[in-house]
Length: 599
Image (cartoon, rainbow, N blue to C red; front, side):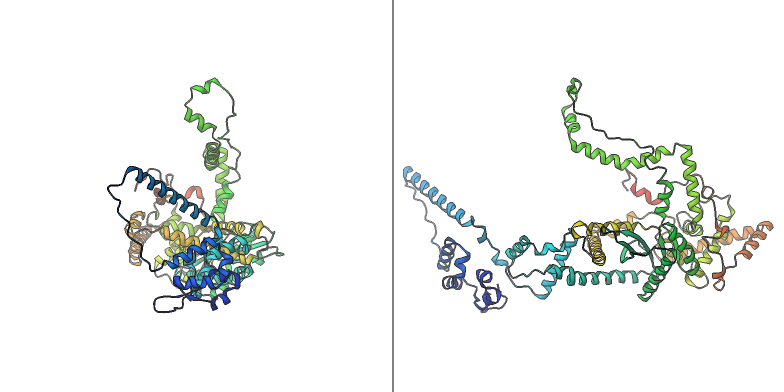
């Protein structure tokens, strides 16, 4: 159907048979008014239609055109004086006519080439063509298809049946211009999200080897809300990945993010020796940023090796099929369940799920395992920037100092308050003014690189054996598009009203959703600090100790670079076994995951 009008009421029409035989341009020259009479005239005068459709179909169309405008006669009423024999004869005649009509319909519909969607044929506008290209790319990425699917004959036949006016892009266009335009659009949106983060983002990177054995350096940004922003993927073949090279790459990334006006709070990496060495050097070069190891990776190093299968137990072993008289008294539905392979498959999946928990819980009964685990935890804990994690407890309105061991004096407000001053001067380059700024920065820090594993998993799924010639930049762009589409679909499913979301918030002693509430909390903390300081001033011994500590750690903006880093300062180290009280209780957020909790 052409969009131009022949008159006030009708548009122009183009013969589909002419399009397929003589081409779109020549067919447009033979356009006609979209009425039955003009369609019949076109069918009689041009033989292209006869080459495409059967004589029966042409005859039917001409008959319908001849009947155009003719009103059908009203059905005649049956006479009440008809005899039963005449009625029977008429019924037989009607059944014969109905059967002949059905046979004709079968003949017409037996030729599938004649079934078309003529009413939906129209040429696409520029906006519609762009939308079609976007859909084609989304299908390619979401289904993990090779780009050559677009030139498959079956695909072309499908779209030609839907609308012969649609021209599909080639494989090179789909994997070239269309993919590049979509990737640029998504990348710009992701960087805008990073720029709009008021608290700053965390940089994370790690290495991965793809299916063609290329060493890919994946780089992501993690926002203050925990959202992953896929940024870059660099081919680092031939590089050894030494500490100096990691430092250079980090400095380059910081410079690029600074040019984009993106605020970076720090870097999180795994605990390999090169990253650990680079992390220690970067901590002294950038006092305003944090350089942390991946917390999840640290826990895996502590627990993974000792609990990895040494106490394993095979929970699901299928019973061999055998004849036994004892089974005849067993309920039939249970016998059918046991004989079903799908039931054993599900049981095996359940075993895989609960086996790690079973191993760990059973291992806790072993004192030797406890001692080894505690030793590893203490070793990993000693390398961490301990004041940062302790301040996270101190500034949390639900915990504060309630979980700390009261017998350790260095875990009091005055001592940990010195580290608040240090971080404030290092991060904001000004004297401490508002305590909630420190809390916002600490609680916005992501301490895990688990998002990188998801990135590599998606890239590995896209860069499969069927698509082994894809460049890593194209794989990165497809990953960005796929991740963005998944987040959009997930946001559509999570339509939670304000009333429902407010009920799910964890209740604490104070709500920290606004700056004014933060100021109220800070004022209470300041009063608590003053009370505790006054009590210490009444004791001469405590006063002398406090003065000695002040002399050891004189914190200011001027001498911040001369102070020992919190990750290395021996005065900021505590034993993990002694920090907390004996009964910590469960975290507040776990209450939402407890079975049987209807709140």
